[in-house]
Length: 61
Image 1 (cartoon, helix red, strand yellow):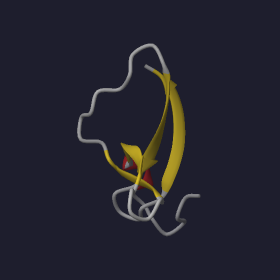
Image 2: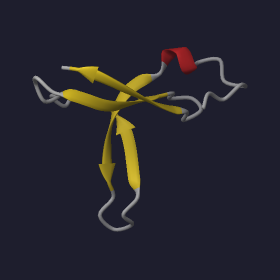
Image 3: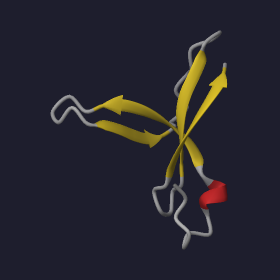
Image 4: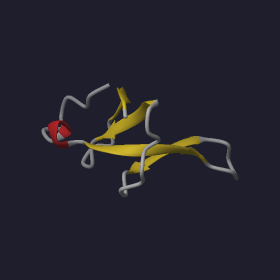
């Protein structure tokens, strides 16, 4: 859900998701140029670097 007070959500960046081994919590981070699997549908978070709003997108790579 978009933060109504944030004016920079349109400049959000794609990220990656992982499960923290210690807590078991699903975490997301800003993409560091990791290669995406070819020929697969990829679920990736779109993260606002100002407010942290995360929107999930699916795309075919």
